[in-house]
View 1 (cartoon, rainbow, N blue to C red):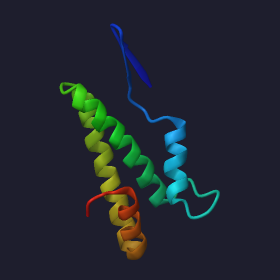
View 2: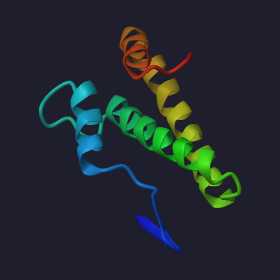
View 3: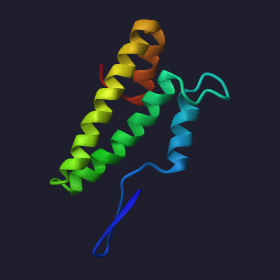
View 4: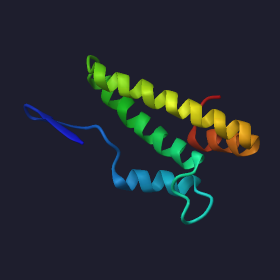
Length: 100
């Protein structure tokens, strides 16, 4: 999704390449594109992009709301991964650079 205001173009979504890199970094097998850890990695990339956008556009409240929803979803997924497999949870947050 891309918005144009006057002469500025704002990229809000992550690129396909960034998404592919995030998926490849944490997938367990070649066709693993929807596991919880992959979803967390993709959400982390989206959160980074949106955070960068919000540093420039402080009054974009809808983007802020979307960011909070993404952070909540990532927290729920991380909780699920932690309950199912604690060692992989620790490896995942280490790899993505997420605080506990």
